[in-house]
Amino acid sequence: MPRRNNQRAGRSGRPGRPAPTFGDATARVERGPSFDGDEEYVVRPIPGARATKTYRCPGCDHEIMPGVAHVVVWPAEKLGGPDDRRHWHTGCWSGRGTRGLTRRWS
Image 1 (tube, rainbow, N blue to C red):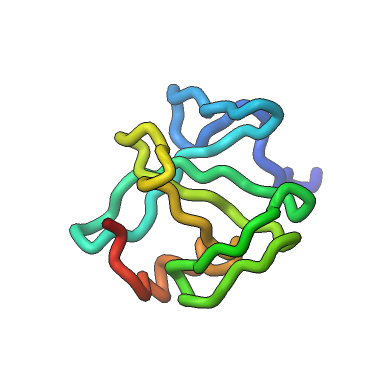
Image 2 (cartoon, one colour):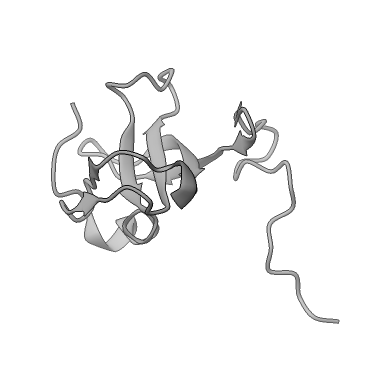
């Protein structure tokens, strides 16, 4: 029997912890980089059709142009207000374990 590669719906990456929802989008909780060590972050995918502004990715320090799918990330212990959120290229967030941060989060 082939193995299942896709993640089952409703899982947040941590057993027993519900995934936060935002309208029609579901976020997940993941461990990520921090200047003080690893920390838990809420990660929400943003499809290209909903990306309407230009952001700067903290992983590569390049711009994320409008229309490019990416992820929005904020510390899990915070509410995710505008000052807490960071927009990352999906690939930069996936490779965060080997690349690190290019700029400090405030």
